[in-house]
Image (tube, rainbow, N blue to C red; front, side, top):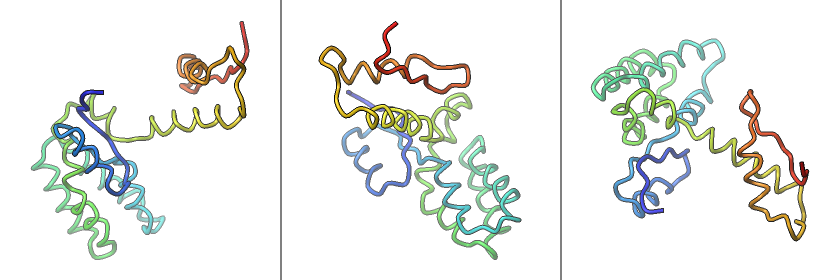
Length: 164
């Protein structure tokens, strides 16, 4: 691998810095799903829908100035009840704002790490079920088949060791 253009990372400490050290031109984006989940951890159930819709206005803003204005609006509305949420977003602001300059199509692809986490979970299931591999069946073949065969629902079909 020679270069990474955009990296979406979850809240793992030191991971963004490691990516930027090895690939200095990389734009590192914090996973917004993880950030929203963290923000919702201590919110009462009755406030969740309204609070999430207010958070959406921040990360769906089309420009950096609009996102900052939305964060200030959010802070004035919610800081009395949940001051740690706006504080958390401000602390991670340099990792949240890279997405504001991207087109909408690219935003949908890079705002979360859930797609790669789902693929990793599927591959772990495959390996977990197998303690050994036959001589003519390499581990890489077990990975390729489920990744290529997908159902209409988007989930992988597990056809390991089945010959057609």
